[in-house]
Length: 77
Image (tube, rainbow, N blue to C red; front, side, top):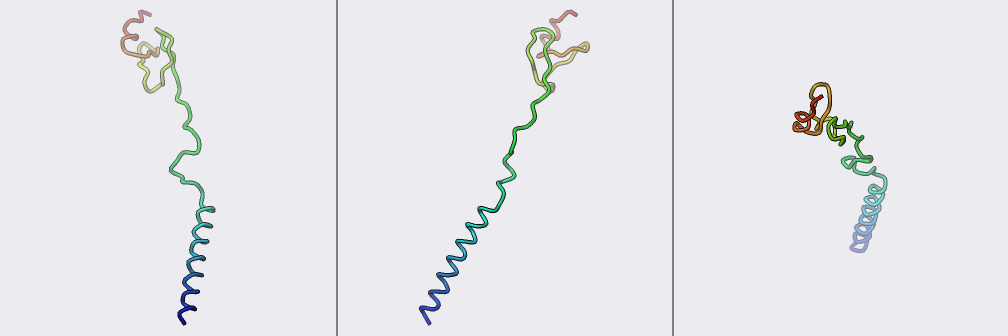
């Protein structure tokens, strides 16, 4: 009876290992990591110096985009 129980435990262990290996190969990659980079931000050109800045960081004045408030003040258009 002891050898039979040992055989059952060994077979169960082998089955469990194979099952875990099969599951890890079939599961898709973790969805929390991005598969592609985010889209590029809209860039605006500073009317004073010509540098490009993201739309969210640009300062707008008199209908023009600037890289900083200082450049918006310096531009005498």
